[in-house]
Amino acid sequence: MSAKPRTTKAPDAASKRVGALLKKHGLPDGVHGFEIEYGEDSVGNPATWVWLIVDDDLKPSKKKIRRFVDLSTAVTRDLWAAFPDRRPYVHFRAAA
Image (cartoon, rainbow, N blue to C red):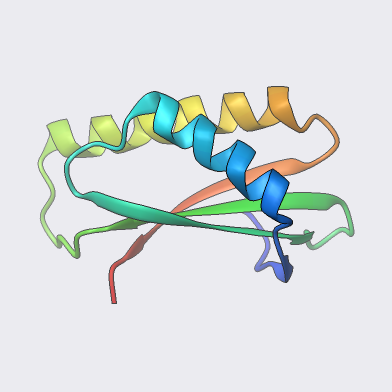
């Protein structure tokens, strides 16, 4: 379980780098964008939160869930590699 971020807005250079990592994977259907936040997690470690903005779907197909899980895993792996000093948290949030 990840902590609720105590955030500061991500610096422009870092935002661009994270955005490039996300775009490398291609956002699947149903993902409309993303938000990036930096802060400290619940134990005080530097962290990066990536919020993937998705359709509000109460009954997603197994295929859709698998695509989202695969994307989350890949993005988490890439964030660890790009920012080894920051704990990555990747979440999905319904579009408002």
